[in-house]
Length: 196
Image (cartoon, rainbow, N blue to C red; front, side, top):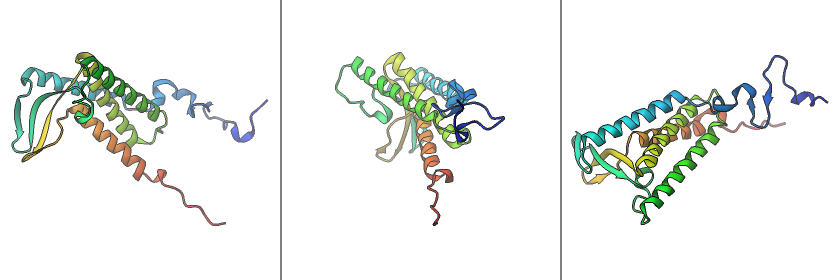
């Protein structure tokens, strides 16, 4: 028995998977519609920058980059983004397990959201790719050594922002792009209801 006319695919169009709301040819990794090359570049750049900091800058030492504004300071973050949970009083393995679980949950959230991004949503795709690359870059550190290397220290007089790294910067920029895509792109706006 054929489905009702409104549910049938138009002649010449690709078959459609209603459960995933994705064309059959876009299942698998292609269905996530991310810029995989961008995510991989972020992971590589993040890991390379951290390796340079470990090799060139002893723990807790600083080098001025922009005097009075930016230093490179080698610190270890056993918490999550921007030092959150860094001072949590639990055993090292328990904190590593907790922060790793949070990172994996974030990656699952990214995967869920990426499945619902349309191909034409370029800003959201770039944002998700940045977030994915940053999340994987920090997860590699957590799995390998149990902490993340942070080194960018932005400050003004006596005020210091939380130390961060390339991965953190990409996650933040990506989240801003996703937020802007959700708020500012016209297709997300409510359509006015016409009077009848």
